[in-house]
Length: 100
Image (cartoon, rainbow, N blue to C red; front, side, top):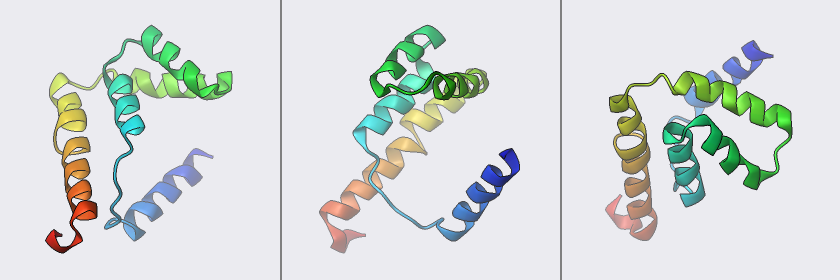
């Protein structure tokens, strides 16, 4: 299963690397919570999705890995090159297509 998911992600990355989309504000909030909240608070924030316990456990397992990111890398993800820049660029392109 893991290999098939990895292969799917690689294929999607190679085929759709130029895809643009506006980052949903709910996703931005969830990503920020995922990166910065302690485990207990994040587990409580996941309750709003009514996800099965297996899904919550899997998400928390991934969170254990991301909790090891340095503060610098967390800032790059949430406030810098990944989330913020993509959002600003994509919103500008949607609001004013001639400027893109």
